[in-house]
Amino acid sequence: MANTLKFGNGNWATKKGSTLAYNDENGNFKPLPFDFSRGSTPTGSKATTINKDGLIEEVGNNIPRIDYKDNSEGALLLEPSRTNLITYSEDFNNTYWTKSGSSAKSEFASPSGDLSAFKLVENIDTVEHYIKRSIANPIGFYTWSLFVKAGGRKYIVFRTNADGGAYKNACFDVESGTIVYDGLHQSKAEIQSFNNGWFRVSAYVKETSGTTRNYQIHISDSPITDNGAISYTGNGVSGVYIYGAQLETGSYATSYIPTSGSAVTRLVDVCSQTVPDGVIGQTEGTMFVDCKINAQGTYTGFSLSDGTTSNEVIVRFTTTDRIEYYLRSGGSQPFGGGTTAFDTDSRVKVAIAYKSGDSVFYVNGTEVASSTNTTIPLNLSKVKFSRGNSTADFSGITKNFKVYNTRLSNSELAALTQV
Image 1 (cartoon, rainbow, N blue to C red):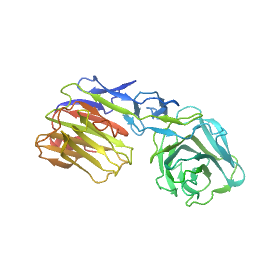
Image 2 (tube, rainbow, N blue to C red; image 1 turned 90 degrees about the horizontal axis):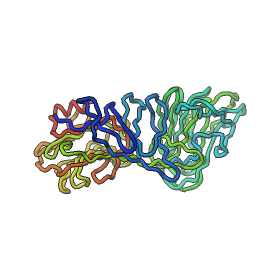
Image 3 (cartoon, rainbow, N blue to C red; image 1 turned 45 degrees about the vertical axis):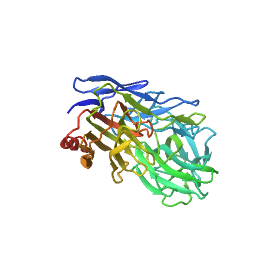
Image 4 (cartoon, rainbow, N blue to C red; image 1 turned 90 degrees about the vertical axis):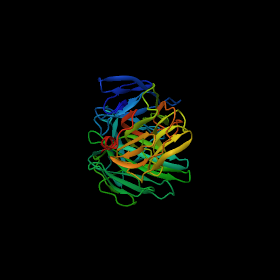
């Protein structure tokens, strides 16, 4: 087999505007840089990733992000453009935040490794103990997220009157890392473990009226399993640690976007490469990807192409959680189709191999489809983490990406994609 391009798999070299492919035959990085961009906006373009120490780290404009969350070898993180609508994401003592039955104590160790976290402390009254922010929402879908750590109390509740006006709850146990109850409108609450006892909790809500709504963060002394009020007698000491509030348009939480006085937009990550002759096979070849998507509800993928969709080898993930595969040649489609729905929360390994009269697609060690059509794509010269025409940018983490200028055998493809 002729493995002409290796990218990732624990070997990363990044700088502003590019990240390099790796040649493990002689142990150094090939001069095959991927062009990379994530531009700036008038309010700044603060992007973050999880570094090797498990801490949140801010990354400058146009610098690729290698993310080490749950992965000691790292993976390239690519995301769509998102805006954090919470304008004071860390300063919970700012008058931007309204507190009821509680106070916010500062200078505690945060998930970023500094003393920027707060402790939300209950008072001694028999009341609801919470902090809130009212948001004037345009109509749409939103994901609300926060980093939380137990601090004498282990239950935290997201409570909002978005979409219809009636308050509903999502309750999380931030010691065991479990969702206790999800009564919010879309029932898509999530909890993710971070370092040093921190969790990131998130919930997906829908606003149909465009009316100003309240987003409340409650402490609770017991598990909440309904949408009722959350009142109890506090002790004046217990509470939860909080950091990094975020409200963004979309159906899932993206990486944390810090704010300090205004909404901040992180622009889309774009990664592609125009390769030298011989890297992409013109009469036969294979593209392999080891990745995990995070773009539910959006088309996203990888391709070898001539810079258009007329000639391309593509693997893409669809709005209906399917994996699709296509060969396109001169605008026609000699080979293509899709899988049944797959688990978007799981890592997936896919490979598409092409050759006149012998093309095939593998997912997680299993042959999905094959073709004896003799038509193959023409003039392939570009590797894109998107469609050939630079639409449907990939969103998620890429652990390993490889290109071969030969059509690997079925046994090689099964072994390569085995999970």
